[in-house]
Amino acid sequence: MNTLIIIKPWAVQRGLVGEILARFERHGIRIAAVKAVLLSKDKAEKLYAVHEGKPFFKDVVGHMTSTPIVAAVLETDMLDDEAAVALVRKIVGVTDPTKAEMGTIRGDFGMRKDRNIIHASDSPESAEYEIPLFFTKNDIVSYVKQVI
Image (cartoon, rainbow, N blue to C red):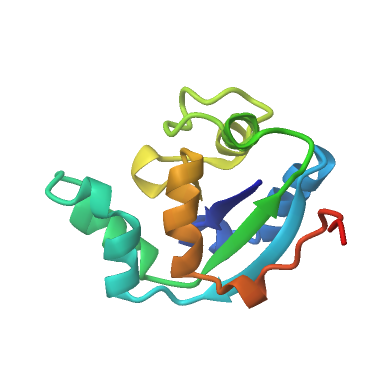
Protein backbone atom coordinates (compact mmCIF):
# COMPACT_ATOMS: atom_id res chain seq x y z
CA MET A 1 0.00 0.00 0.00
CA ASN A 2 1.20 3.48 -0.87
CA THR A 3 -0.42 6.70 0.28
CA LEU A 4 0.55 10.36 0.21
CA ILE A 5 1.07 12.89 2.94
CA ILE A 6 1.98 16.53 2.50
CA ILE A 7 3.58 18.47 5.30
CA LYS A 8 2.16 21.92 4.71
CA PRO A 9 3.94 25.31 4.86
CA TRP A 10 3.21 26.11 8.52
CA ALA A 11 4.68 22.81 9.69
CA VAL A 12 7.72 23.14 7.40
CA GLN A 13 8.34 26.70 8.63
CA ARG A 14 8.08 25.52 12.25
CA GLY A 15 10.68 22.77 11.71
CA LEU A 16 8.31 19.86 12.30
CA VAL A 17 9.18 17.73 9.24
CA GLY A 18 11.41 15.23 11.05
CA GLU A 19 9.02 14.82 13.99
CA ILE A 20 6.05 14.29 11.68
CA LEU A 21 7.82 11.69 9.52
CA ALA A 22 9.10 9.91 12.64
CA ARG A 23 5.54 9.44 13.90
CA PHE A 24 4.69 7.30 10.88
CA GLU A 25 7.92 5.31 11.17
CA ARG A 26 7.14 4.53 14.83
CA HIS A 27 3.97 2.82 13.61
CA GLY A 28 5.89 0.65 11.12
CA ILE A 29 4.98 2.78 8.12
CA ARG A 30 7.95 3.30 5.82
CA ILE A 31 8.90 6.40 3.83
CA ALA A 32 9.16 5.26 0.21
CA ALA A 33 9.74 8.75 -1.27
CA VAL A 34 10.14 12.26 0.12
CA LYS A 35 10.87 15.67 -1.35
CA ALA A 36 10.66 19.36 -0.52
CA VAL A 37 8.87 21.33 -3.24
CA LEU A 38 7.61 24.82 -3.90
CA LEU A 39 4.16 23.92 -5.18
CA SER A 40 2.89 25.64 -8.32
CA LYS A 41 -0.60 27.16 -8.38
CA ASP A 42 -1.60 24.70 -11.12
CA LYS A 43 -0.49 21.67 -9.10
CA ALA A 44 -2.15 22.98 -5.93
CA GLU A 45 -5.40 23.48 -7.85
CA LYS A 46 -5.19 19.91 -9.18
CA LEU A 47 -4.50 18.56 -5.68
CA TYR A 48 -7.52 20.34 -4.23
CA ALA A 49 -9.77 20.10 -7.31
CA VAL A 50 -12.47 18.33 -5.29
CA HIS A 51 -12.87 21.55 -3.29
CA GLU A 52 -13.04 23.93 -6.26
CA GLY A 53 -15.91 26.39 -5.83
CA LYS A 54 -15.90 26.13 -2.02
CA PRO A 55 -15.25 29.35 -0.05
CA PHE A 56 -11.84 28.18 1.23
CA PHE A 57 -10.47 26.92 -2.13
CA LYS A 58 -8.56 30.11 -3.06
CA ASP A 59 -7.13 30.45 0.44
CA VAL A 60 -5.89 26.85 0.60
CA VAL A 61 -4.25 27.16 -2.85
CA GLY A 62 -2.60 30.41 -1.75
CA HIS A 63 -1.36 28.84 1.47
CA MET A 64 -0.03 25.73 -0.26
CA THR A 65 1.95 27.81 -2.78
CA SER A 66 3.29 30.35 -0.27
CA THR A 67 6.42 28.49 0.87
CA PRO A 68 7.85 24.98 0.43
CA ILE A 69 5.94 21.85 1.36
CA VAL A 70 7.29 18.35 1.93
CA ALA A 71 5.53 15.52 0.08
CA ALA A 72 6.06 11.89 1.06
CA VAL A 73 4.86 8.51 -0.12
CA LEU A 74 4.23 6.18 2.78
CA GLU A 75 4.23 2.40 2.42
CA THR A 76 3.23 -0.60 4.45
CA ASP A 77 2.61 -4.20 3.45
CA MET A 78 1.16 -5.20 6.83
CA LEU A 79 -2.33 -3.81 6.16
CA ASP A 80 -4.74 -3.77 3.24
CA ASP A 81 -5.12 -0.44 1.42
CA GLU A 82 -8.23 0.73 3.30
CA ALA A 83 -6.78 -0.12 6.73
CA ALA A 84 -3.45 1.51 5.90
CA VAL A 85 -5.10 4.78 4.81
CA ALA A 86 -7.24 4.67 7.97
CA LEU A 87 -4.15 4.22 10.16
CA VAL A 88 -2.33 7.11 8.47
CA ARG A 89 -5.39 9.33 8.95
CA LYS A 90 -5.69 8.29 12.61
CA ILE A 91 -2.04 9.28 13.19
CA VAL A 92 -2.76 12.61 11.44
CA GLY A 93 -5.95 13.36 13.42
CA VAL A 94 -9.11 15.25 12.51
CA THR A 95 -8.85 18.43 10.42
CA ASP A 96 -9.74 20.90 13.16
CA PRO A 97 -6.79 20.95 15.61
CA THR A 98 -9.06 22.16 18.43
CA LYS A 99 -10.99 18.88 18.05
CA ALA A 100 -8.05 16.60 17.24
CA GLU A 101 -6.95 14.23 19.98
CA MET A 102 -3.66 14.88 21.74
CA GLY A 103 -1.14 12.36 20.45
CA THR A 104 -2.17 12.96 16.83
CA ILE A 105 -0.10 15.22 14.58
CA ARG A 106 -2.86 17.82 14.30
CA GLY A 107 -3.72 17.57 17.99
CA ASP A 108 -0.12 18.08 19.08
CA PHE A 109 1.05 20.65 16.53
CA GLY A 110 -1.97 22.19 14.81
CA MET A 111 -3.16 25.67 15.75
CA ARG A 112 -5.75 26.78 13.22
CA LYS A 113 -8.13 24.84 10.99
CA ASP A 114 -7.55 27.30 8.13
CA ARG A 115 -3.79 26.71 8.33
CA ASN A 116 -3.78 22.94 8.53
CA ILE A 117 -0.30 21.47 8.94
CA ILE A 118 -0.67 18.15 7.10
CA HIS A 119 -2.60 16.57 4.24
CA ALA A 120 -3.19 12.82 3.98
CA SER A 121 -4.89 10.99 1.14
CA ASP A 122 -8.40 10.04 2.25
CA SER A 123 -8.68 6.82 0.23
CA PRO A 124 -6.60 4.48 -1.92
CA GLU A 125 -8.21 6.09 -4.98
CA SER A 126 -7.18 9.57 -3.82
CA ALA A 127 -3.63 8.33 -3.25
CA GLU A 128 -3.51 6.93 -6.79
CA TYR A 129 -4.50 10.39 -8.10
CA GLU A 130 -2.31 12.46 -5.76
CA ILE A 131 0.99 10.56 -5.75
CA PRO A 132 1.75 11.16 -9.47
CA LEU A 133 1.32 14.91 -8.91
CA PHE A 134 4.61 14.75 -6.98
CA PHE A 135 6.44 11.52 -7.82
CA THR A 136 7.20 9.24 -10.76
CA LYS A 137 7.27 5.47 -10.26
CA ASN A 138 11.08 5.67 -10.36
CA ASP A 139 11.07 8.09 -7.41
CA ILE A 140 9.38 5.55 -5.14
CA VAL A 141 11.57 2.97 -3.42
CA SER A 142 9.51 -0.01 -2.28
CA TYR A 143 10.50 -2.02 0.76
CA VAL A 144 8.02 -4.77 -0.05
CA LYS A 145 9.81 -8.00 -0.92
CA GLN A 146 9.46 -8.86 -4.57
CA VAL A 147 8.84 -12.48 -5.53
CA ILE A 148 10.95 -13.49 -8.50
